[in-house]
Length: 309
Image 1 (cartoon, rainbow, N blue to C red):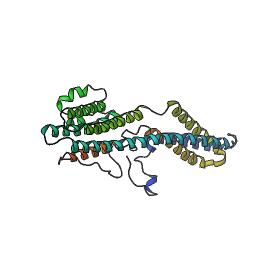
Image 2 (cartoon, rainbow, N blue to C red):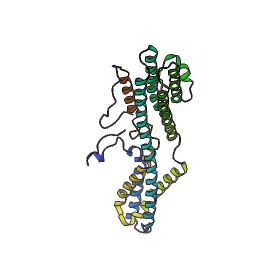
Image 3 (cartoon, rainbow, N blue to C red):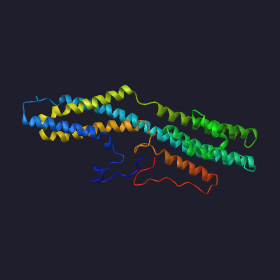
Image 4 (spheres, rainbow, N blue to C red):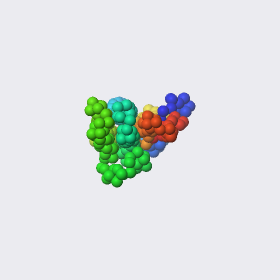
């Protein structure tokens, strides 16, 4: 995730990290070359192309801008909702840890062991959720927070985060049977688990529900058709300035299209995706510190304005 301040006027022209230029430069280059060819033909044979009115291109450009704006708003809304969901997870994890440490009896070995087990399972859930959303292997991050006797059944689980929530629920039931806390606090802690279940379901909804393909296809086709037709309408009036103008317009439209495509699923590892690794590490540090651990992992900080994903 890019967290740098706005670059100055010089750097803004050459910044590539977080830019969509690496993804769209073939299309922009193709439109620029096509515009150059058409401008050359128009210069050598002025009557080869008819003089077209720019009015159709203006109307189509306005319509395309509205389409791209709507799609970008929809994509950004998904990105921002995902960030809010992970912010809620930070809140729920800290709240559950506070309740576990404050209200589960720590005067007995059983109580202290239950506290540690529940907090470790909460950390494991955070890492498991991140890996599930990114379709990566979770075991290196999750195994160390789950007791070895559960490793075999954990690997058979179809939904690892949900499996860990069930283990947390069983720990609450165990605490109630052992009378380690009151029924009222059991209910309050169960509400935290319910909220974490909502976080899981909301992340899966965003991850598994892309924008409608027909709408994406319409925007793609319209963008390409507009940029390919534009040089024919501008060559007669702009002459050799046509490649520059068409290149800038192609960069704008293809860039908006590529950016909205990138942030539609905000859980990836691209520069503009959410820094889930940094958020997970923050939760891990906070919860281990609450347990009284001194050997804490290092905090992930932004380097050169860029967060490790």
